[in-house]
Length: 247
Image 1: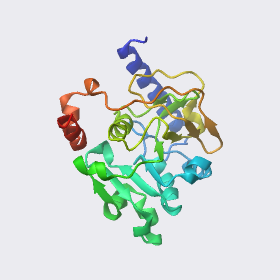
Image 2: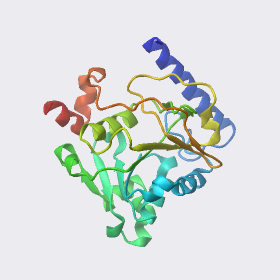
Image 3: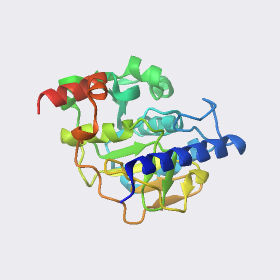
Image 4: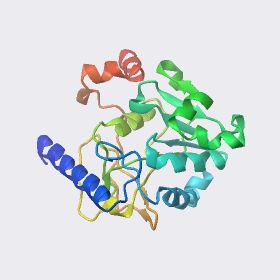
């Protein structure tokens, strides 16, 4: 078992390597610099299109997609294909937004796929209202780096893990709910990445050129690991605070 501090340091070095690589190769896109972010990349639209061709995506009625810039084309694909889109608000501070394409004019779909537009055209679910969300068929998450075994490194805030854990805790997803990431090919590393118990693995990796099923991904977190959260984090996210108080 790797030392916890060592794992965090290794993750930090890998993030810096990828951020620097994307900037140096001029593959990074707005917002730049990509350091400290889920990096936007040249080819994000193609990766979103490739994702939209996966049979399990096409069968899905309700999809949850992260709010970061490189997944905006994924959110747009979801709405254009008539799927109900669930998007976490940044840092989950205001909960989750539900966007129903049936209620959004066709010429407003692109706006609805942005954070600003989603707040205007979607419906907010926070605290106990989260229980009213529909069950989710498919999850898309952003990444800084992934390996072929499904291990994923995010930007370091742990929000993708918390989003997953919250939805798992309230029964909106389960172990069999597919988790996919869209990345640039350079973000896929051959070596095994360091991981922690709460880390969210991915089942499928989609790039502008490939769709890859991961090799024996690790088990997904079963819910919220309360012992890993400090009071400050819990109190900063109203949904977490509400779930903590009702345990």
